Length: 148
Image 1 (cartoon, one colour):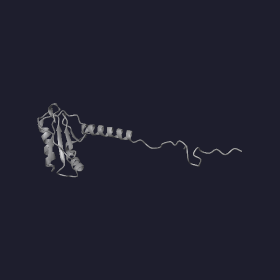
Image 2 (cartoon, one colour):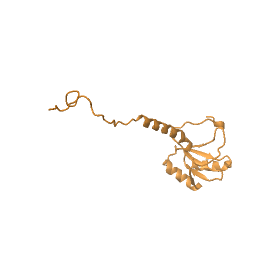
Image 3 (cartoon, helix red, strand yellow):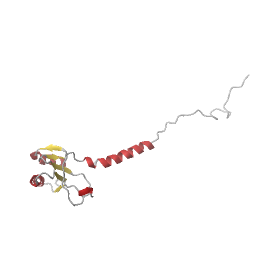
Image 4 (tube, one colour):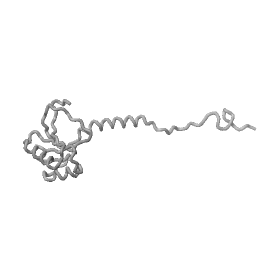
């Protein structure tokens, strides 16, 4: 009679093993994609801070470094007031700012005004914000030729 077939190694579990499929996930492409997305968002996020199109005046000043993102109040060429990118009536501006900041007088507020707008309207907005108790109110201007 014929002897039963055995593995080349002569015993059970030795010798040639059956081919196993590898079920490990290669995370290198995932990390690469996530880093590229992170860089894209870090570059584009500061450009999208305000959605109100305003033609800012140019100045020779230098940029101010900040830790926290400030609130932005914009005044369009037509005299409309925006808090961040939402249009508000002039009399609604102060309650909206107080609600956003929690009535924090040290909250930084930037006022952006179109250069075609008369100076008095911008000062009216800044005066109302200062009179409401906010102490860190600043004007925003654009640097010439993209200088930093």
